[in-house]
Length: 346
Image (cartoon, rainbow, N blue to C red; front, side, top):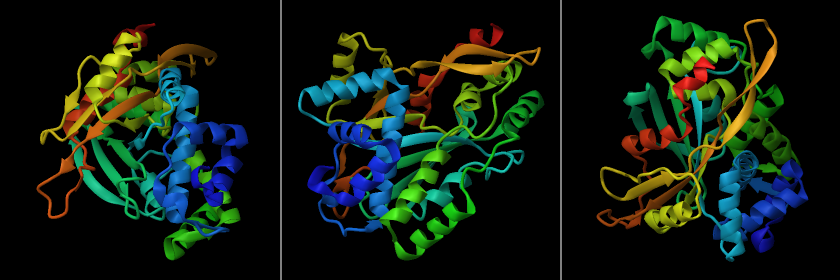
């Protein structure tokens, strides 16, 4: 690990292995704040950073386009700066053993030192987004953008399909994991051995917790919400990770010139300080249950890789980086995982 932070090294290596940890360390900027640590005691900010490194690695394993981009950056001697990761949830009473909506993740994020930083109505797609910033190092440790889908805003047929898809969800967080979160919330640190045990469970929370969906339910969901159809196959995995760059337009031009599948436009926030674009989602093969109860495979949108540029808030009492988000930007970026409606007729 950069600056030889033995806590970060132990946490990440024990979860994804030495080779993968070395690779993600080569690709990601490790904030300077981690140059100081206390051996054997993992702070909440170290756990937050380690979780983001593990989830960043997991996404690159699923997103070849993002992996190629980050390898290009590393080949030029640079590193990407992970700004935030995003995930999707469903606020629904029929959610099996998994807590409904974002509560499945606030119970993890708050002990890691995260606090709510903004609420964003995503009315066009029947969702609400919330951003969480790590309060120890808000501009250096990646944020989380957690969105909730609201099935009650869709048709009764859609709601029934949602229940069939997610109604058997399991809760990946064990009583031991919850106890460690409680201890972390109280003390703001854990012994490294306990932190590793917790990190294993935290990683498991960013996955699909429900069983294989029926193809007919996926097709039905897709007619009303590409986002819910995505959740049906991908669950609570990271929807995207984001590289904070100086010039989004320049990155977009470079990536288009390489023939990579870029979003055609750049999203600009209402205040003009936040600019975002992204690669289109890489497709993945996922299993479904067909009408006869057998397993079939279809290609569907997976996760993607995003780019963001943030300006300073110059009119603040103390100049600071604008760590906000924009509802219009988010809804535009979410289109990167929109499947063709024709997929539901296959």
